[in-house]
Image: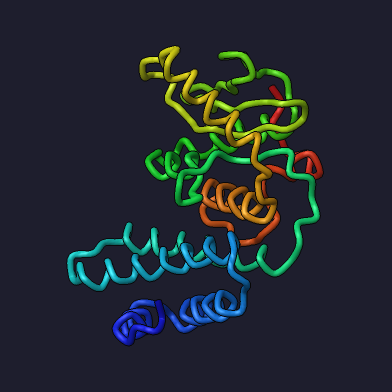
Length: 234
C-alpha cells in the first residue's frame, strides 16, 4: 500500500499527477470506510494499480505499450469503483455476473484474451441478454445461451433475473454435460446469496467500459439498456 515509501516513489515515477491523485483519493476513501466487502473490494482495485506500476518499473526498459494499456484499464476500473462507492445504487439489478474467489468477473477475464475486433459482438450479445430480446437458446435447464457469429455467452435466468457466467468461442469443442452441470451448480450457489448491488454495478460498468475501449463515464452498463433502449435488433 501507499505506506511503503518505495511504492509511493514508483507511483510518482510511473503515473501522471492526475492518475496519482486518483490512487491517493482512493486510498483515503479506503481508510475512511468501515470494514466489510466494499472495503476489501476497493483495496483489491487499488492494489491492482500498484502491482501493475511495480511491474512496469521492474521491467524497465523492456515494458511495452500493452503494459500501459493494462495500467490504464486498472486505473479506469478504480475510478468506476470509487464513483459507485460514493452513492447508493438507484437501478434494479436484473443483470449480474459470476465472479471468482477474488470477486473478479469471469467474463472480464475472458474478454482480456479476445481480439478487440470481437468487442462489438460481445457488446451486442450482452445488450441482447439485458434487453430481453428474443433469441436465447436453452442449453441445460435454466442455463441459457445467446449466440453470435463467433462467440456465445452462457447465463442463467430466473424470472427477470439473469446472471452472466462467461463467454465461449463457437469454434471450440462444446462443453460436456459434466461441465454444464458444474456451471449450473455454481450459478445456483450464487442465486442463494444476495449479490451486492454496488459491486455488481461496478462490474457491469467495468465490462461496458472495456468493450467500449475504456469509456470512463459511470452508469453506462448493460443493466441500463432497457432505459436507453440501445440493444440491437435480432
